[in-house]
Amino acid sequence: MFLSEKARVISPSPTLAVDAKAKRMKREGYDVISFGAGEPDFDTPDYIKSAALSAIDRGFTKYTPVGGTKEIKNAVSDYFKKQIGISYEHDEITVSNGAKQCIFNALYCLIDDGDKVLIPSPYWVSYPEMVKLCGGIPVFVPTIEEGFMLKAETIEKIIDKQTKVLIINSPNNPCGCVYSKEDLQHIAELAVEKNLFVISDEIYGELIYDDAEHVSIASFDNMFERSLVVNGVSKSFAMTGWRIGFAAGPKELIKAMENLQSHTTSNPNSIAQSASAEALNVLTQKGDGVIKAMVDEFSKRRKYMVDRINSMKYLSSTVPLGAFYVFIDISETFGKQCNGSTIINSTDFAQLLLENYHVAVVPGVAFGADNYVRLSYATSMENIKRGLDRIDQFTLSLK
Image (cartoon, one colour):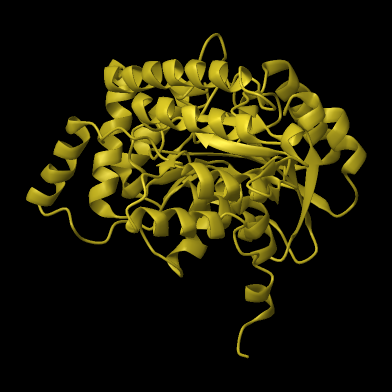
């Protein structure tokens, strides 16, 4: 066996078995409805595509600076100034192959072996694995009893001398919660008091509903030098395949992240950088009606899905205020049977739903919350209605 210890600590995705079965069933001709998508079902706006074609036509197909062109750093700086009210200089901004690479690069440059990283639970599946790959120890901070909201007093009970970094994700995947300004203020004060560095994953920052407000923890007093804001174009602009993420924070960290990136992937795609700069510039300077239309449609789907779920036997959900996911409490189905098989956890629920009613959902165990499943409403209303009809039939069949 030639695998390194680092490779051996990577956990396989708990969702792979269900996902593989769903794909196999589709290939075999089954009408499978999937609620697993972590990407908008809308197309990338035409003006962004045109910017990419223009970059190709003018021969912008060579290497760029590792951390991004002047053009895209200007666009990111203007975007952050408008969105979260913070002015970042070019040496305080870096661009990577997706927001995920930004987060990994930051963790690699921030933590040493044995350092602890606080991760609110439920969490996005890649956070703990990235921490482990960097030699750190993921420590999960419970939030379910607080309505999925991270609280400073809960964090304070867990902090010890090895704790170095806190990851925040708002708007949140998988819960859809949006942290309040008051809660972020308390967390920021604690971070300063306890000398914590905060990575703030704000990739869903444009996907906000009702009266919710997106606030960045980096905007509070004394947080500029101890926080990294991470964002990108994947979710807000329906550009998941373009692979452009960006981050802003202290120049020493940004330089280290770019040094690391220079030895791994080098610069992000030149053409995608041009297209992403155009996307950000249009949004910052003019506002983007395409994004607004997408958010309005997501909001309609969200309300329909939550109302339907809460009318079903055994299931319940709170109303998400951001992103495009509904996190469903399935704990009342535990101990119930479907065709002779007993539901004990979220994987059982997902597998039985897929096998018997041809609906794919993501088991909550993937996010550290085995009493839940995640549904994405980044799919058509027609699919949502048909899929929820089947889930309703599934719950009514349980004995």
